[in-house]
Length: 110
Length: 420
Image (tube, rainbow over all chains, first blue to last red; front, side):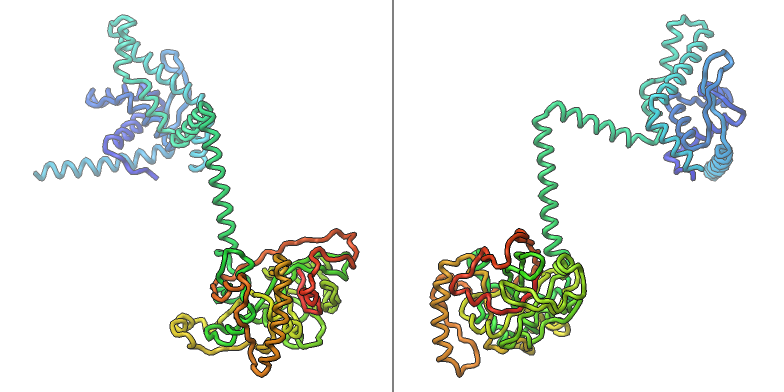
């Protein structure tokens, strides 16, 4: 029961977060670093939208949060994908592919 | 499963708020610490690194607030906060608080009271078939309830000439001393014409209803009991029918019991002979009902008076008037004299008019009666019955509190009545 996306940006943020979590549990800071790194600094996730998005995804049941100890021996909150989160990721990816290919078609036609 | 998770989540958001806040604060400070570490690694001083981290992170409190909204219980939290704010404001201004609370309380109370009345009087239908066809006629006059009674003459004139109504019945409430039971009681008694039940379309639960023969001269007084009276005084035994009660000292045979919920509860039928003696005196309430099949074209007929069929009820011949007593109970001194004068006057007139088959009621001389020649049409109201019992120790022969005056003495002559 995915909610209607208020705008593209928020939808893509969810997609990016879910995608970043695919490789295993990771904390909030790690997510922002991962997204920035994998996009070659092109995408920067603002903390102001990262944490609200994490809480929203957690409420949706797509990700799960656990306290753990990070690599530098500090207490950190690790997020991981749930089964529902994996399904949602697949849905978001296919949405994104449809959307981007459609936009590409439009751009090429003109 | 999903629902359960959501409930747990929201429950936690509502009731473990402090833990959630702490978690969030810790998470954010951890994030800031990492940003600071990155700054330190880039060669900044600790203070600069901290400032850079805060700058990069953005407004901590705004982020916290946005994150809080994601918990899905923001609406509830806002309501709770507003409620708390309201309470604090009220405590700050106790005078205003008292006035506001009183205003609301009185408003609710008044609305409830008005609705109760409207519900009982207007919204709840009467317990009769075709209640919409029942109307009550009363005399227009001063806003004194008693004076709105209709004179017997009007009753008979109506019954003779009104073409829009199928039948008329007249009734009167009074209190009577009921003896012959375990102890003497003062009860509301309704005196009615014999067609009272037939017109309402209600039959007794037990026994029979009134019959025209009950009003024959010399007939024994008869009564129909209200359901509650039957329940409390006779233990709901069928043997109540056939028992004899004394109503104001006059024997009265129980011929039936009304079903539960019959709103009037008591029905009294008076004897024709006695009624004939008392035509002169007073006034009446009247109810009228058109037949169900007449109801359709009733409105049409109302446009042309004299249009429909006139059904004269066969309860009593037109010469049988009705006796009223309620008036005298409240204006006894004046009314007794009036009644005596009227009685003599009527007796004389009756002798003169004996050949006429109708009752002649010339305008009365007293100012009270002058108002009673107009009619009002009212909705018939269910009457709640006051229950007033005398102390059980009262001997049956004790003089009733409202001892009938000289003109009333034949009031307590044999009659038929219902007791409720």
